[in-house]
Amino acid sequence: MKSVRIALTCVVIAMMASSALAQSKGNAKLSGKIVDEQGQPVADAVVRMQMAGQTEMMTAKSDKKGEWSVKGLAEGQWRVMVGKDGVEMANQVTEIRNSSPAPLTITLAKPAPKVDPTVEINTESQKAATLAQAGKFAEARKIYEDLLVKYPAVYQIEGFIARTYAAENNTTEAMKHLKINQEKEPANVDLKLLEADLLMASGDKAGSKAILDGLDMTQVKDPFPFVNSAITMINDGKADEAVVSLTKLIAQFPTVQELYYYRGRAYVAAQKLPEAKADLDKFVAEAPPGTKEVTDAKRILDQINAKK
Image (cartoon, rainbow, N blue to C red):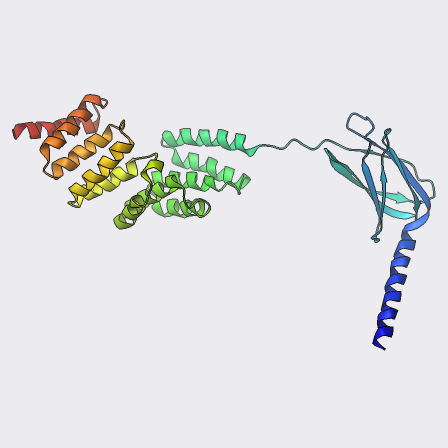
C-alpha cells in the first residue's frame, strides 16, 4: 500500500504542476522594446515574465534593435522584469487582455554612481577636529555622532567620540565609546594609549601602568600618556622608575623637548642633580621661551646652582 500511496502522490504533484503550467499558457503574444535613458536600443537585455500567482518564468532577450517578444501567454496579470549588466533592473506589471496586447517600451537606466563615504567622513572629521582644537568638544562630538548615524559600520568614529568626552574629563562616557572601537581593533596602540589615559584619570594607576608597560614602544606615536605615568611615579616616590621610563621615551622621541624637562624633574627627585641640570639646561636652551615649563625649569636650575 505504501508504494501505491507514493505513486499516487507523484501523480497528484505532476497534475498540479501541469495545471499551473497550463494556467500560464495561452495564445497571446507580448512584444516590446528596451531602450536606454537617451532612447537608444539596448541589445542583449534579458526579459523575464511571470504570471501572477504562478511560478513558471517565460524568458526572452532583446536583439540589436532592442526588440523582444514572448509567445504562448495566457491572459491575465504579468510581471515583466528586465535586466542587463551595467544598467539598473526594470520591473513593471502589465495586464494582457487579448491575444495582441500593445507593445511595451521599457527604459533601463544606468545605476547611480556609488558614493565613497571616505570623502564625506574625512571632510566632516576635519571640521570636527578643528572644533575640538578650539575647545568646542560638544560641537565636534555632534559631527561625529551624525556621521555614525549615517555610517554605523565605520566603528572608528566611536574612538573619535571617546576623545571628545576624554577632553571634557568625562571618563565614563569616553570609556564606553572607546570599548566599542577596541572590540574591532584590540591591537590598536593609539586606543590603548587613550585607555591608559582614561584609567589614570579615573584613579586606576596600576591599570594604566599595566597597559603602558605592555606596549611596543616602536609603535607609539604619542609619548604623553607615558609622561603622565612618569609624573605619577615621581609623586609616588618612584623617581628612579620614572627616569628609566622617560629615558626610553627620549630614545623614541628625541625631539620632544618636554621629555627632558620631566626627566630633569625625575632626576631632582632621585637626588641626581648633575643629570637633572644637564636635562633642564638642554630644555631651557631649546624649548619655546615663556612657557610655564621653561619658567619652572629655570627656577629649579637656580636652586641647583645655589647648592654648589
